[in-house]
Length: 450
Image (cartoon, rainbow, N blue to C red; front, side, top):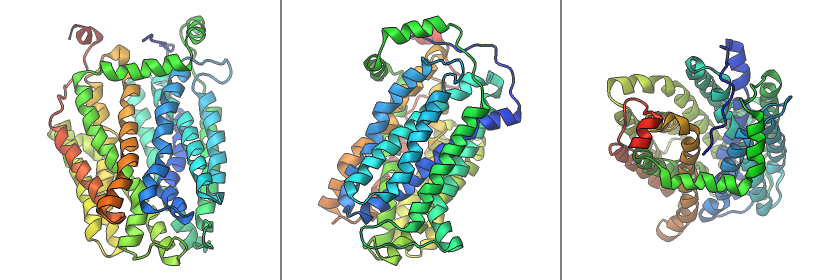
């Protein structure tokens, strides 16, 4: 794979310049958090059964599987004198995502909501995928840690606020939390409207306040664009699955069970909590919507815990190892999910979310830290892109089998999906012990010889 380098003459950026280039991630996280906390609620309100939810959610991972390599490939090979390399994708994705966020809660039929999920997830991926390369593009090596830390901060802020929006609107501002049968509560509608405005505003702040560096060889960039198309980019990305280093393959298995569990949680927490703890399966009832709002608060809590845990995990890793740290974190998350089955007081779910938040923080950091030490420096971005497949593939598998498992073995009781997710997280933690974690990054020459 060719390396399309960006100008190496990168000055140190100020705190506010790093702030501006990272601010858009808060908007992107608004979209993801609203999706994760509310889409199952919308589907159930429009008539979906619990065993149908995974298939309906299938839109999200399939969209990511197709969109991520295409956008990653073309954002590497884009340059515009005024808009730069990544920012055209930020702006286009923000516009489309805002449209989807406004339309989703106004769906009047299940098929419309599924279609809006496709649009929303594709749009979020268009914005988000280039952000992952933005730090490397814009910052010198010694400032990249600060850049990723700033992104993590905005991810946490966006997720906490967006997840709790329906609860806040209902309890702080008196917005209606119930709707006629087949309708979406006003609290959810206004949460999506606010989220759409926040998404567009935050991303456009980054677009307008940041200037990118041109590639070293614009003509080479244009020549490669002419030589390859979308199919070429997709083929090149999927080919990387068969070229993975040993450590990457081991981590891929860990990622599979980790993200299988996360997808089970995102799909089934609302229906699991409302049926098992609140005792209702009627999406039009006040009790159901009260429980669904509380799920949003719990999701906000685990994201807040994750933001704090992210600063502690490196300390634990230095005193033990990255493998042990990831094992402990995933076990905390697994125990947290399993414990929801034994909870009768909704407030106690917050305790379960402490474990989930610790696991989430580790999932976002430790596998990538271990992976970066096993990859050649000249193909880091390429293999990181391939590694994203092992976020998407387990979600597709979960969508294919979770509904069947609940329908066949658990009488469509959604709480058992959280139990399955908890066991999957613990299994992922144990599999981490098999990972060959290297202490230092390897050179391109050593990788070629190995």
